[in-house]
Structure formats: structure tokens, C-alpha cells
Image (tube, rainbow, N blue to C red; front, top):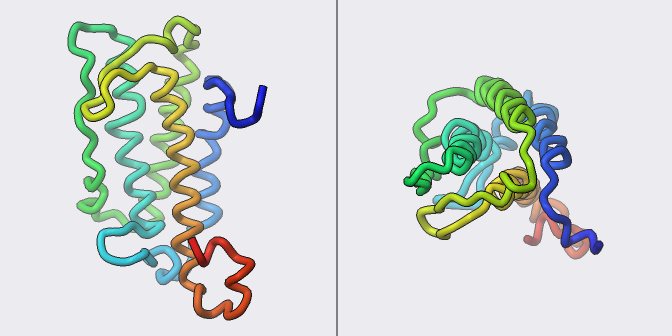
Length: 177
């Protein structure tokens, strides 16, 4: 099977999901504010903002939506996700990292505890914008979502030195993207 065509695997997905909090803590904890607060301009997110957004997903998105799918009630439509809720969170970065770590540990334990079958992974719910989605798609998106935001953080942080690297810009995608 080509590496870019892998079906969702719960154990593999959980293995990545459980590592994201440690990656973020190792990367961001104790950094000077300019690194964690840098963004790409108006209405874009810094690393600080991304951690808040990931907390929101843990609280209101991935597991709650999976529970809606698994319940198979008549109403399977997901509650819309507030992508900007984290902007109202007063916690500092250390508190956010700790909250994310704790929530993610609980949610990965829940995911593993379900011992999902292939039939359950094919159950569907309804996304408010995308329409019908399977549990496997939701869970695969959770994993890809983590990777997307790790990539975003690297891009935003890299751009801080876009001018400072001078001619090496030609070799550094992170300052050009």
C-alpha cells in the first residue's frame, strides 16, 4: 500500500495523539514571548493561540462528536465548533499546556477504551458544513489536525527570521511558506 493511502488505524492514531502534548511542551514551554506570540498578521494564530485551539478541540470537538456517532441516535448532527473560543481563554501558556496535556490523556484513554470495531468506525454522523462523515474520518482528522497545527507553529515561528537568514531563504521552506 502506498504510504499516502493508509486507512485509519486507532492504535496508530492514538500513538500520535498521545505525543502531541509532550511535543508542544518541549517546544514551547519557557520560550521567550516573541516566539510563542508571533503570528502571520491580523486574524492569524500564534503558537499560544494554537494551544488554546487544541484545548477547545479536546473539550468540544473530537470525543463529543465521536460520542454522537457512537450513540446512533436519530439526531446525529454535530454542534458547530467555535474555532475562536480560545481567544477568550485567560490562561497563560504554561496553564494551557498543562490543560491540553490532561485533556488529551483523558481523551486518548477514552478512545482506546472504546475498543472500536471496523463496523463502528464506519458509523456516520453529520458535520454542520461537510455533511455525512464516518467515525474513522473524524478520528483520522483529529490526528491530521494535530500535524497541521504543528506544521503551522513551525511556519509561524520560522517566519520570525525570514529576513534575518538573508540569502539562505532559498534553502529554507519554513521562512518562505
